[in-house]
Image (cartoon, rainbow, N blue to C red):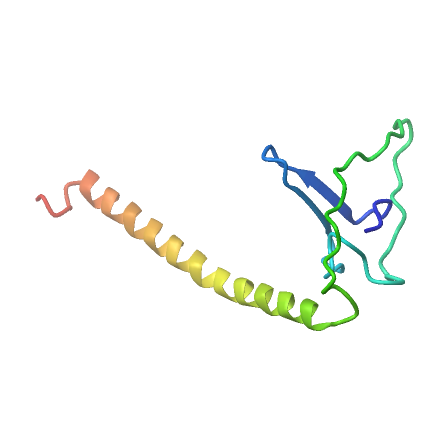
Amino acid sequence: MRQDCKYFESRSYPNGDTVRKCDLDLAPEAPWRCPENCSSYERRLVDVNWQHGSLVTPPTPVEPTSLGDDDTIAALLDEAEDIINNAGPGIVAEVEAERSSTRRRRFLRRFGRGKNH
């Protein structure tokens, strides 16, 4: 991936795993490569008085041989992402309903209108 792009992000975790990704979600073959001639590529710039250092990331894993010009990989990942995104609002609604119910029960108990009275 183009580590000099302003949309490139790399994050390392204590267990040694490293995530390399495009913040715009335009690199379906991350962490190995960005799309050729990406229209959103912008060179990373820094503000005045910043000191330039080097980006230190662990080496990228070896690219699988199955990776190539086949768009089905990106389509599959997009489909999986759509499933997650579509499930999200329902999950949030369930959690909020449960929290609301719990708050209501606490309120009723606090003011003597719960099951015990």
